[in-house]
Every structure is written in structure tokens, then in C-alpha cells.
Image (tube, rainbow, N blue to C red; front, top):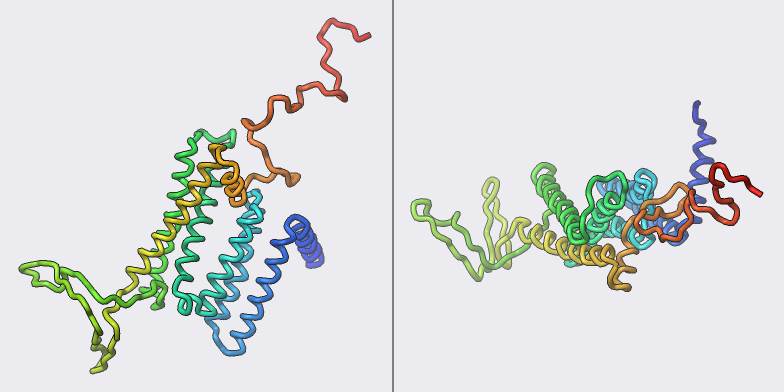
Length: 310
């Protein structure tokens, strides 16, 4: 059956209406962020900043990720998690890249990496928790191991991102690993190879770099660290975000700490039933919950064979 453009438009409208009914706040936020992104793209195009135009279109695609995850994985993203995800994408791409927040606000990158660690720990926790509760899975992790898997999942994503930054700087000749000025270095590379020892240079005031054909560049204030501090600091704040959520995830599974459990529930995706209701794991169904085999007022009890109903 061939799909007509009119049918696609009608289906899109239905999806938009359904999305609005389910999560009005998130839907309004999505529309506002997209409007800002479109305005940023137009402004960048007028100024012929084509790299910013590309970043803007990339941001528009990334903003669709939460909806795509819900539809493809058949899960329900909590409103708080989806809101944080949308704001994270906007803060990283539009504010950070297009508007140079990474340069003007020193802690901007650290903040986003902390949130990144928190979010991916939530995703990792949810994926394993869903398998843990599924009747088809062959394993059953304890709350401690569940929290550890979530933590390791988040840290793995953080490490892979640092790999990406490293290779992007080397291949694409960009500066994703932000450099920093240091006033002291310790290195064996500067020593005599025949008698290796650690050379310590302190109170460095400036560095003179000779390059090209007799050209010279002076780095005032110290020596240039090539991205090492940035990478390690990114991993440290990613560690903090992952650890914080892992603690909440442990409390959520353990069932202790009412307030902490409520916080964790706001960030843990859950299975969505076909009718939109959340699936309840078998072990959480109350004993007195009626089942298909349980007689109710409207369903007469089965009459044993050989007994005549009067």
C-alpha cells in the first residue's frame, strides 16, 4: 500500500496531538527550544557561519532523540528525565557551541559532563532494571550490582566521548579537548636519555614557541597543557554524576528512603504497556489482585464436573 503525503501529514498531526496530551510541559519546551534553534540557524546563515548552521540542524535532530527512544524501545521516559535531556542538548549545542558558553563560562563544560554522567547512569540503570524484571531474562542482579552496572555504563559512555574528542582533535584539527595554562611541569622527556630523571620546572612565566619559517608565538602566563587537565576533569565530574544517580538507583530498587526513591523515579524510564499504562513486574502484583482465573462478581465460579447448577 502506497503512503500518500496527505496520510503522512495526518499521522504527524495525530502524533503531535497525542504528544501534547501526554506531556504538555515537555511538548511546550520542545516547541520553544526548536523555535530558538531555528532562529539561531537563520542568524548564522545570514552571517555565513556555516559551521554554526550545521550545529543548529544537528541540534534539531538531537532534540528528537527522547521521542525516538520512547517509540523504538517502547518505554516511558519520566517528564523530569526528558526535560533534562532536552535542556542538556540545547545547552551543549546551541549555548555551548554556537554561543561560545564553553569559552565565556569556565564551568559550563564541567556542568554538562556532570549532568551527562547522571543521565547515562539513569539510562544504564533502566536498561538493566528492565531486563532484571523481565520474565524472559536469565539473570537477577541484586540492588548493589544493578547500581554498579549503571555506574559503569555511564563511565563507559564518558570514556568513549573522550576518545571521540581526542580523535576529532587529531583528525579534524579542531579543539574539543580544551587546553589550559599551567605554571609547572614535571617530565622525564626533558632529561638525558642516558640518565633519565624527572625534570621539574616551576614558576613558568611564559613559553616561546618557534614554528614555521622563523615565526614565533609567546604564551604568556605559563606553559600550555594540551587537553590533559580538561580530559581528567571531565571524567571526574562524569564520575560524580554517575555515582550520585547510582546511589539513588540503589535506594530505588532496595525500597528504602521514601524521598530518595521519589527522586529516582523521576529519572528512571519504565516499560510502557500497549494502552499507555506502566507494566507492573510480576513480583509487585498484590496477592489479592484478580486474575483471569479468579472469580469475580460478574464471572461465575467454575462448576465442578458432575454437579448440576440449580
